[in-house]
Length: 371
Image 1: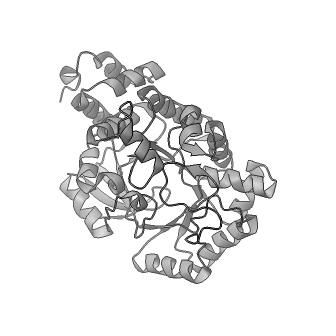
Image 2: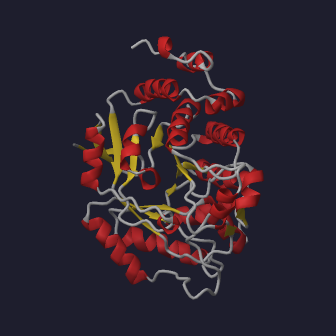
Image 3: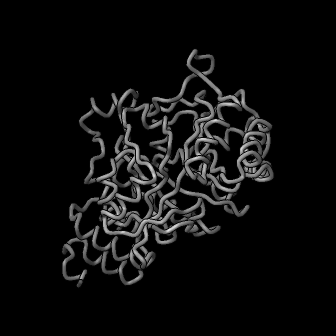
């Protein structure tokens, strides 16, 4: 196929330059995000995907998301899951419950447990060390993919340690990989409004770059479709790419649109005509642009959790190459009204139906089984 011949004239020079191996600027990224030529963007992104993953394999992982606590001192207006300190619905899971959840995951052939919670002032460094070592010792089949940069930064403050020393302590306990949770939009204007009490942009990157210096696996995320501008979406992508140049970067990128139900931010967005929730068009466009911009990030994960399985299939032709985790349990997004679930067998079926070869992977994207 002659991709260049089918490209829209307004963005063709940008796409031609990227397809020739060039690196996109912030201004070019903004131009792509403002373009409505979705098919041209998708075609170009699909070419880049094929260059990175020529065998048309689409990976997935069998995992489980365990929210070890919902107590949080941050005041994020987009979150329907957290509870304030002292709230009657606040919890921290006991070891028996964690063991049950891990055993259920192992019984399903799982290999990864995603640990995410809030900024809970009652939980100090020894708790996190015990949590990691407890799971890794009792369930050696599982890799702990744990704690967002916000959690780690907050823990470093509680512990009166540097971020680097805090990460060293967690690494010594067995932590090898950190998810990019809490990325939202990596621009301080947005973060100060929607994520009060949580890390600002430089602090988020400081945690991730310190982890990368220690040889830890990291990912990056974006939650869009609320108060951010197109320019701020572009700035977030460029910041992730530039950060990734320093110490080996981010193994994958995951984006999803803001889920407004039961949230303060949702009320603000829905009542203000200046704001607009994301839709399927936005999702696919951002997937394609992310593939074109993030030239040092090999894997883009589709988000069936928020978009649904059918949109996730389409996204595989817009630059995505990973179906993410089958997640036996998901509490944060579902608290805001979204409840899609996809098990391992369904993931295989959906990937095949989209014309790709499904493979089961581990946390580090090593292929464990081809179907």
